[in-house]
Image 1 (cartoon, rainbow, N blue to C red):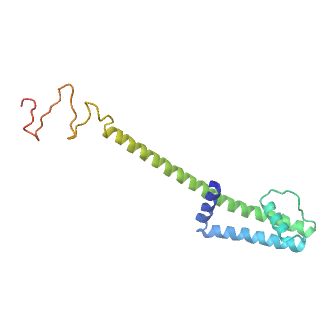
Image 2: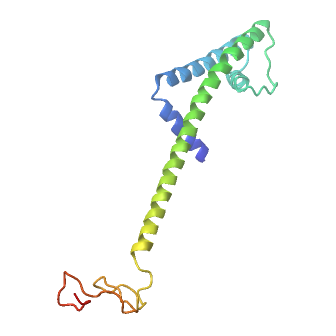
Length: 165
C-alpha cells in the first residue's frame, strides 16, 4: 500500500510540470491509437486490443495475441519503437519523484530523531534523576555539599556565612 501511495504522490507532484503532462498525453494517445488500430485491422475486441498494447509497451510479450496481418506487424514494430521510449520517459519521471520523496522523508526523519536525542540528552543533563538523594538539588536550586567544602556564602546574599574575606 505504501508503494501505491508513493506512486500516486509522485504522479501528483509531477503533474505540475507541463513536460510530464505531455508524456502522459503521449502515452494515453499511443494506447488509444494502438487499441483502435488493432480493433480495426486485426479485428480484436477492445479489451484484447488494449491488453495487447499494454503488454507490448510493458515489454512483457506473453505471446497469447499476435498480429496476423502484414500491416498489423509493421504497425507493431513502429508502435514498440515509439512506445517503449514514451513509457520509459514516464516511468523515469515517476520513479525519480518517488526516490526524491523517499530521500526527503528519510532526511526529515533523521532530523527529527537527532532533535529528539538532543532534547533527551539536554533533559538528562539539566534535570536531576534522583530526587530522594541527599545530593539532589534543593527547592531553591542549591544542592547539599556532603564534603562541607563548598562556599555557601555569596556576594548577593551577605547574611549567609561564607569564607573569611
